[in-house]
Each structure stands twice: as structure tokens, then as C-alpha cells.
Length: 242
Image 1 (spheres, rainbow, N blue to C red):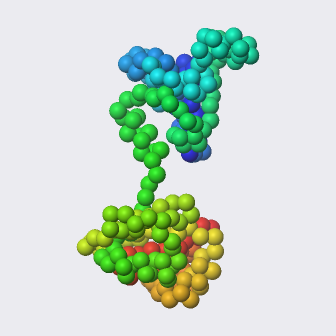
Image 2: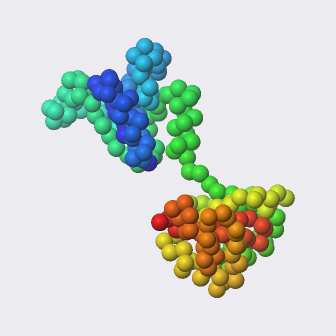
Image 3: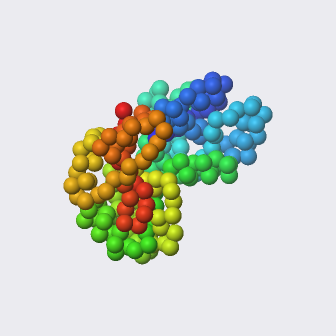
């Protein structure tokens, strides 16, 4: 997700709330940053009825690290438009991908509600593969499917697929879910199914109302999908968006 940090929020805040509803649909998040203490920001935001995310860099080096505030000795060396921008109230908009796009040392202070939202939205999410027999499952995933382990951890194994990580872990509850555990999004589901069948994978055949399966592949809901089970009874799938 692309993050936009706005360091002069009062300048455009009257128009932000309306436009802010559309940003997440474009994979963009707006975060306003001010040097005032958080208590003052929260009180002012409440009085004005504003809803956008607004945090405090009070007492930290965040603004200096981000290049929107400067020590007095550096201001004289800046171009006039850059040096006078903040004093004239012109907002600086900065773009970054994710929370760690810049090596920032300064910390931001935010409300407890926003803190939880920011932490989760910036943290990677992992998929679980529960197994009752790790050795048996590893043979299936590594020799039959072709996954490569990146780390052995807590009695289980971490695999990486397409930049995302999945954690296989031992549990007595493996294979108890009747829903799909995970799926791979592929470009050519027919080719993937043919390759997996050649490797010995057995695909499931489901009788779903209004859905016709051909060569173990169901076409519905804007995708072509085929399901199979691992050695532990987990339901997995390969799916191609249409």
C-alpha cells in the first residue's frame, strides 16, 4: 500500500475527509503529521469534526528525517520555495510504500485506536498449514508440490511462495476444516492442474449447484479453480482470475 504523509494538514483538511473514502480503493492511505502534542491534535480534530488519521511528531526527529523541517543553520542554505513552504502554510505531500519506506529515526504518537490499525495494516500476514505429521507433510509439500523451506521454526517449517510466507505447524486439529485452507493464484490453471496431476496430486470433484466442473476445474465467481487435499486432509486450491 502506498502511504501519503501530509505535514501541513490544516491547509487542506476541509476537503480531505470527502476524498479520503476513495483512497483505500486505490491502495493508498493518507496520514497527517503535525508537530503539536497529540492531546491538542485530538481536541482540535474533535472540535472540527474531522475523521482523517492525524498523528503527532512532537518531541521527535520525524519531521527532520522526512525532510519537511530543518535546523536553523540549514534553512539559509535551502532554496527559497523550500525554506518558506512551511511558513507560508503550503502542505508537503510525501509518498512511500509501506511503513518502512524511509529510514526514519523519529517516532510518531497516535491514538490507541489508530495505533492498532496502523500496526496491523503495516504488518505482514501469514497463512497457516496445520499438520498432524510434519515429516509426512514435508515430503508432500517439498517433493510433490515443489516448495522449498526457508526456515525450520517451532517444530514446523516456513515456506515462501510468490513473496508470501506460509507456516506449517504440528497440531492434533489438522485436517478438521471443511473450508479451503489456502490457494495459489496462478496465470494458467489448466497447466498447473495438469502438472500437479503428473506429480501424483489427486484433485477433488465437487457437485455444486449451477457449476460445471471440467478436468477437475470449476468456473464460477470470476475465476477458474481446482481443489486438492494434502496428506493431512487440508483443502488447498489453485485459482485463475478471469
